[in-house]
Image (cartoon, rainbow, N blue to C red; front, top):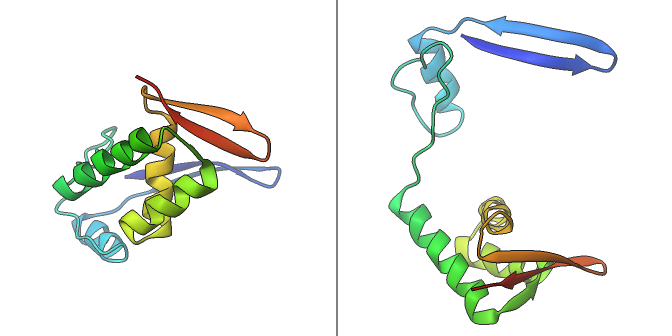
Length: 117
């Protein structure tokens, strides 16, 4: 079961979809993955990071640590080069923004990402 709540313009929306295992598999195939079973009611499926994701995360942290400080656009450009994907680079940038060792400050037009010990 999938529940979608929100608004469309000023109109409230509360939509419930009931999906069987086949529906979940077809939905997953559109995203390049197959879902083994429908999630349990009330359960939120947690994505497990792969070893490659862990390696990219570690490399992204090392990149900023070695640089000391980078502007948001410069850091994003390097992360996109590292991952080979704009979307994956943006995910790492967001993850860095929330990392305890990273300070994000306003640098005029762009944010400045600084590594702190």
